[in-house]
Structures are given as C-alpha cells and as structure tokens.
Image: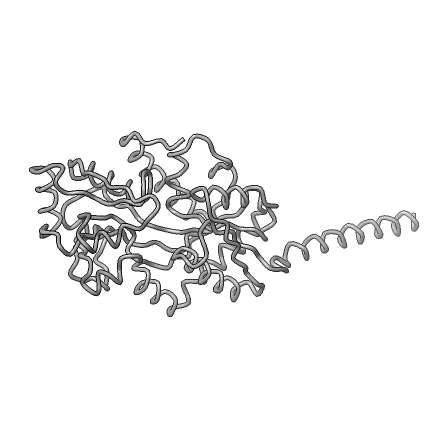
Length: 326
C-alpha cells in the first residue's frame, strides 16, 4: 500500500510539474520579438502609423516589435504571408480599409480569406475622409457641387487613385448618396494632387492626411468631411451629416490582426496591450493633428464587429457600382 501511495504521489507531482511548465510557457508570452507584416511600402503614411503603434506595443509588451514591409498586389502579398504564418502570436498583420473591407469584394480570386485566415486583435486608428476641391473651383460648397453635377452633368470631374481604389469607391458612394453621376478621372500610376492644385481636375475624395498640408496652405479647398463631428483642425468645415447627406461615411482606418489559430490567451494579451496605446496622450494628439484622425485601441470583439459592419457598407457600394477587378 505504501508503494502504491508513493507511486501515485510521484504521478501527481509529475502531472503538476507538466501543468506548471505548460502554464509558465503560456504566461511567458511574449518572450521574443514580434513581427508585424504591413502590406505598405516603407515611408508611406500607413507605414508610419504602423511603426508608431509598434513602438507603443514594444513598451507595453516588453519585447521588440519589428515592422516587416511586404507591399504589392494591392496588399495581397502581405496578407497571404501573414495568413500562412505560424499562429503563435509572433507574426501579426496590419490591415486597412482597402485590404480588409474593400478588396475581398472586388476580387473573387484571392490567396487568403479575411474571415477564415485571420483573428481581429484591435483597431489602431481611423481617419476622416474629405471632399477636396481644386483652389480654382467655382463651387462654393457641397450643395452647390451637387446642384452643378445634376444640372450640368459631365462638366465637373472627380479624380481617383484608380479603378476600385478607396478614393474611387468613396466617389461612387457619394454619387449614390447625392443622387448624382460624377465623371471619374483615374490616376493609376501617379498622384492626382498636382493636377488638382493646378485645376486640371476638380475634386477628389481621400482620407485627409495626404491633403491636410495643401488645405492648410490654401493650395486645396476642403468642402466637407465624414464623421459625426467637425474636426478641431478644420472647425469651419461641416460634416456630410450636417449638410444632410445621410449614409455617407467612408473612413480610412488600420487594424491589427493575427493568423487564425492563434491561442485565445495570446489574443487577450495583445488586445490589452493595444488598449493601453490610448494612454499615450501625446501620440493621440499627434494622430489627431497630423493624420486628421483618432488613435484607437479596441478589444478583439469590438474590432471584429467593426470590420463586419464596415465591410458590409463597402460591399453595397461595390455591388451597386458593378465593379470587379479579376
């Protein structure tokens, strides 16, 4: 009997030892550098945003957080690389409006599936979208623009970053919301801002960071912005809601995701670390002034709901515009 008790005790201790080892392994996350894949080129606005958030994560998690740029194929290269990564919390992905909400509805052939291959971790930030006009434009405001688009169709045009781009689909969305049919001028390989400043094209819809400098120096005119309230950097500019254009709210945003299969406890650690990003008031203020948006640290559940709702809005626009890029 004594031998059996001793044998049983050894087994219990061994079992406890294994459990403690497993618990320690889980509790240790993260214990080595984390890589965040971004499908944007180095030095671009989204890349800069990602690096700032990575710095905050590094502080909150106590390990190095490295940005790995994998641009190309409208974000597909970076997304595919992240989808195929080991789901251990050490490879993450920065997603955006275009790569998560728009592209899944534009392309039927994809090397990844947003819903099946990724787990949302946190929204990083959201930026207002503006209706930007050439300084030579004789349009006084948005209502005047809508009236002219209706009474003199074809005379005014809207520049875009190319067919199916965020700027193009925002323009299509505006057309549906305002009951107008704008003429779109695509700039697939060059930026339209120089032509917009010179008056070669009339209008452009875009997230505000790229245009903010030109607006503040008078080289561009801002007619209205999306969002529920006016932006402190442009207190005299109304929102589309104020003007009475309902159901028009395209927003540029970025978020953090992990490969499907990443353990729940790891997602929890990452989510909590992201929520602490908002504690950096200096960074939040810089995002508001520089990127004309808001720094956001959400829970995984909140981000999942956000993606689902935003994706549904863009799908409706894409389906109505009948655009496919395969």
